[in-house]
Length: 268
Ligand code: NI
Image 1 (cartoon, rainbow, N blue to C red):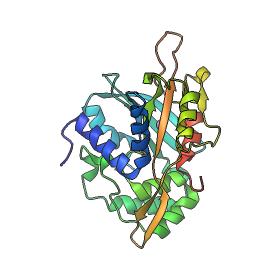
Image 2 (cartoon, helix red, strand yellow):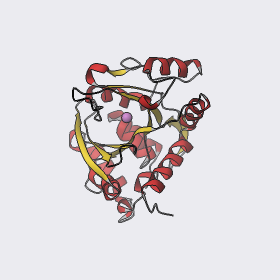
Image 3 (cartoon, helix red, strand yellow):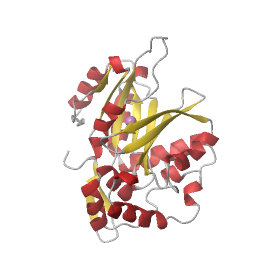
Image 4 (spheres, helix red, strand yellow):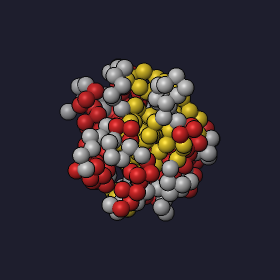
């Protein structure tokens, strides 16, 4: 059944996410067993800047249910544009939606994406739970490989479609593990692998945001021609620092996120 309100939508997104990223549930349970009560800093969604499925289309239910558009970002290296949305209730997770700038890619990639989008049943992208719907098109592993040559981000969207790319533990709310280094060390001791591309900790207190993440877990995906095991989702951890006015910074840091997007790159 389609989500009727925000909490139903967020629950659906978490269930869908943990179903393909059981590691996130394991980390959630591990920290909960330590007496921590986890809150979620942000949920990240990925798409293309195609008019049917752009950031603004994906944002519709969130805007209808109390979110407001806040920052926007350019990721030059990854050729992405993104916006983040905050709810009027600050306890609700921020929603971070990025879109691949198709015009910066080859005509072949653009045609491939157009053909995928053309398979989406008319109007499906306007349903309230489009962001937990999964892959709304058929795609072969051959096409996945062709897309992957140009962009691992585009290949991820082609393979997984519409579902959270990651949820994010809000470190500030933790008691024992409110220092990102202490948290990272604890997770590594417990056997979880962190993304070390660009250093384990992206950002710094000076840029008001520190983040780390697990590596994406590999899962078996059913393509139209065969099954393949490919990187899926990761779990992220974010620590926020106060601005000169004393309020915690709520934005994102483009330079750090360029690196963190690599958590779903192949070969890591
Ligand atoms: Ni993130």
